[in-house]
Each structure stands twice: as structure tokens, then as C-alpha cells.
Amino acid sequence: MGRRLRPLVSLLAIVAAVGLGACGDGGDDQEPSAEEQQIAKVIEEAAIRADPANCSELQTESFNEQIYLETGEEATEACEEEPEEDQADSVEVSEIEVDGTTATAEAAIGGGDFDGQTLALELVKEDEQWKIDRLADFAELDRDSLNAAFAENVDRDGETPEELRDCVVEEFESFSDHEVEDLYLSGDPQRFLDAFGACFDE
Image (cartoon, rainbow, N blue to C red; front, top):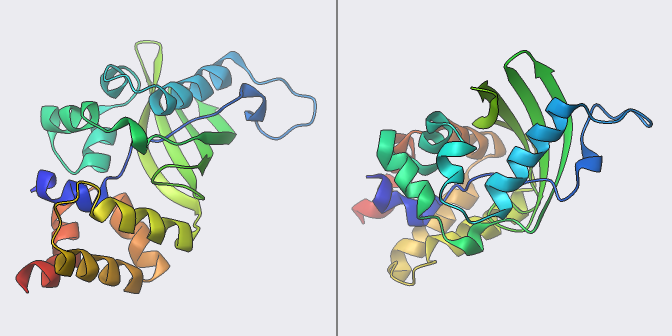
């Protein structure tokens, strides 16, 4: 199921900070803490470096399941197979808040499948290593950019029939902002199938 849907949704591993100076709570003079620096570094490495090891070392299985619409090891394998061109060009990380072994951060994305979006991320610390655990929300949604990225992904492999491609893109563009956000955050392949089911039935 997930492999059939992946060319349509290709929700990618989140990308990262080009510099650590953007991290922290927004204070003019306050330097980012060691924990904040590590969190920014994790987001950066998970995004910019096309290294399959990142899928398990810097991301939790739960995050991979949410993004790749697979379960267990299949989700990790889907992450490891992610095309390098899906990576973002830049990210500005801000609003990092640490609470024990959990943390939150916002990432403003430039380029890639989330170009123009600001994403709210949740992280967890496992064995002294911070990992991205969940895409929690769209802190800022640029709908035009998201629509364009989605349309590009639908036929990235060049094998999607034109009628199916047009139907899926049209359906996606008809969704409200709330419906789009809810779909991306759900991590549920059945939700995607239901959302675009009419296109596959034609």
C-alpha cells in the first residue's frame, strides 16, 4: 500500500539548519545551549546528508512510519531509499525548547518537498542521542508551494498515467488547508487511499 502511494505523497525526512546561529529561544545575546546545538545538528544531518544511516541514527521508527506510510522495518527501508534530490536546500531552525528527554523545534524549509513551509517538529533523546520523532504541525503553511511540490512528486518516476496524475493533483488542490495538514500529519496510508480513492476507481 505505502509503496503504491509513495510516488504521490513522498513525505520526506525533514531538513535542517544551515547554521546553528538560528537556534535558541530568540534572545538577542543568548548563546544556544549544548542540547540546542545538538538538536539543530540532528535536524541538519537528517536532512542535508543523503546517508541511509540517518534513518535509524537520527530519526525514530515512529517518525519514519509517519513520513513514509509504512510500518516497522519497511518504514526505515523506505527512508533509506529516499532520492537525494528530495533534500531541502536550506532550513532555519528556531523555537527550540528542551524538556528533559523531549524537545520541540520549528524548521523553516527552503527547497525540497516542503519548500516554503515552517514545520513544528518533536524530538526525543534516546541513549544520549536526539532523534526526530514526529512532524507535529505546520507552524506556517505556504499552500501554493506545497501544491507545486505535491504535483511534482505525483509523476516523479514518469510512470503515472496522465489521467490519474491530473485527478490526484486536482483532488489535492481542492482540499482545505486544514484537510491538507491533517492528511500529512496522520501518517495513515488508509487516509491517503480514502482521500484519493475516487481517482483510482476511475
